Amino acid sequence: MKKYITVFIISFVLLACNETKKEGIIEVAASFKSLEVEIEGMTCEIGCARLIESKLSKVDGVTYSKVSFEAKKGQFTYDENKLSKENLIAKINGIAGGDLYKVIKSTDLKKIIEEIK
Image (cartoon, rainbow, N blue to C red; front, side):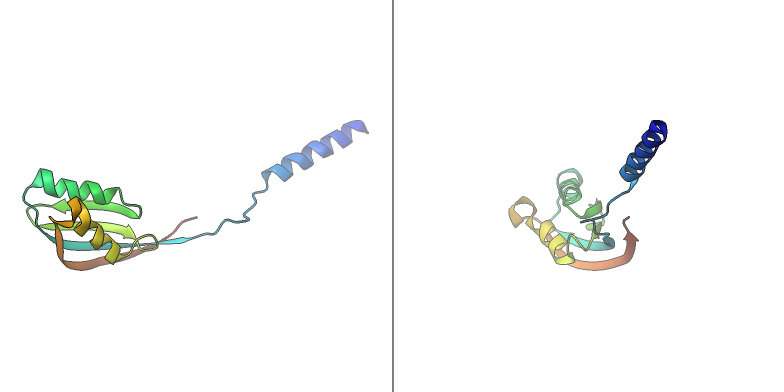
């Protein structure tokens, strides 16, 4: 009898521990958008283009950052739940104290919706 009770208790504990509680967890859908911007004020590839690319890649919500000095354009993919298009443009305009770079035109490239589970 003790054997059956022990097996029952061990089984109950193992099953109870394997249940995943989802209290307080909210599933959020990430909504990714891609934006292409024309940037005025870049004077060199290494100093300017890479600086903008590097700074934007560290912004929370930006998942892709690529700047072309030759084209004077940058392409960025961001989660619009964390960052707006206007905020992204303001981040570019604010690099180096806001005196060097200016976004003169922006174009939405595509919208990708991905559910995070």
